[in-house]
Image 1 (cartoon, rainbow, N blue to C red):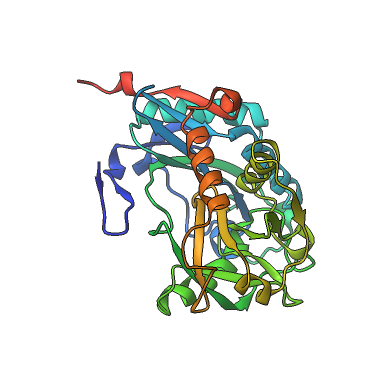
Image 2 (image 1 turned 135 degrees about the horizontal axis):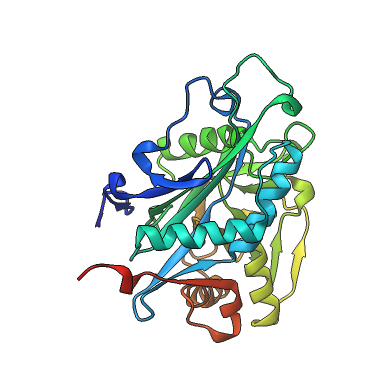
Length: 324
């Protein structure tokens, strides 16, 4: 495996196996028709799950996998995606696929439940068949930077009465893609989206936290922020390990300019400090002490090195599976 210019792992995709239509097959055999409903309408839900390589353990540590699949199945209920698997069965399929692909680097695990009916011009979810597929790929630094320069996007975060913001529905992510594209074309690393009331919601693919006077704040779900699993992890660590209070409340854009620290969290993004927003430095323009300590603890946990939180990791031994 090598690393490309964006800091992401490159690999020979032809060597990978995927889970497709109920069985493990080479990626070259996992094809869908151009008539597939989800391709035309975005009728699917997905998750992003991290597997973190630990060389000493010769193992991939999959972080909070079951919680991700519970959320996926919640999304399936909303979009009427009838897939024949429980959360535990999906976890078992995932560990099998990671073993089969013999990963020895950090990986991204992408489950997708989608309307697989080869039928267009039908907007009735109850009439459409669904399927489930799963891929695992080597994965590096998603954001491309360890210190983020962000801008406030001109695009507003999708509102729950339009499309449920609490699930990872495929079609919603056009919203995130527009915001991310706008930010990067303007020379920034990431976008911060406001909701329709003009309050802070989240990044294009991450939850947002603000630190002020030793207290941590994050937008509530009523501001159309995703109930992130990494978000929940950060809140538990802040309370239980640092003894800090966390307020879930509405945050104004201008509050971020005056914050002591700002950071983003997400499965792909991990926990990454924001040092600048809209060409204004956050405090002194350096990662803050609370962000740095939470980041240190988080990275120790997700690679399986903290016994207290090892229950969050599903360990898959893959190093010993690689031929010498």
